[in-house]
Image (cartoon, rainbow, N blue to C red; front, side, top):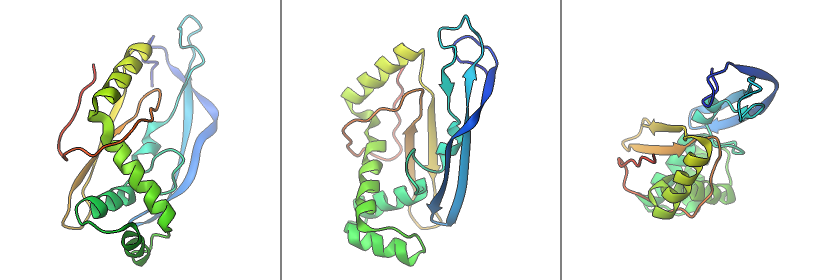
Amino acid sequence: MECVHCGAELALRRPRHMRKTIQTMDGAVFVAGKSKECTNPSCRHFGKHYYATSVLKYSLPYSTYGLDVLAFIGWQHEHEHQQLVEIQRSLNQRGVEINQTNVGKLYRQFLALLGGTIVHTQEKLAATAIEHGGLIWAIDALQPSMSWKLAVCIVRGIKWHTSQWNSVTTGTSTTVN
């Protein structure tokens, strides 16, 4: 992998920046990721850490639940109009150990992921793109074995943003240049 700013080879750092077991709809999965750093002393981003984003394909940072669980919660609440306690029961019956508080937290994170089309969020993302020379976007389309489909768009970049969240129509996309 190369530094996005200067093209120099990135060196692998020793410690893992992420190591956790996550619960998915299909069972527990262990994920781990090591970061890399720019080795070019003349690069203005020398020593900056680049985190392994492939581990983020499965769950959000600091979360022990898979993106499929998050999508399930969002879909059940938004489209099936289920209460959080009903969603909790359904997940528990499917083997996902979760309490109502975490269902609510994951629902708020679901809404957060869909907030990238809000104008003030787009402005923050555009400013971050300018500051860091671009953003790295990743899109993960989840299609569970059930009859529903949902695309979850996740902003993965050099810097994570928190903002107010609103839901958007599934199937739309936003580009920040």
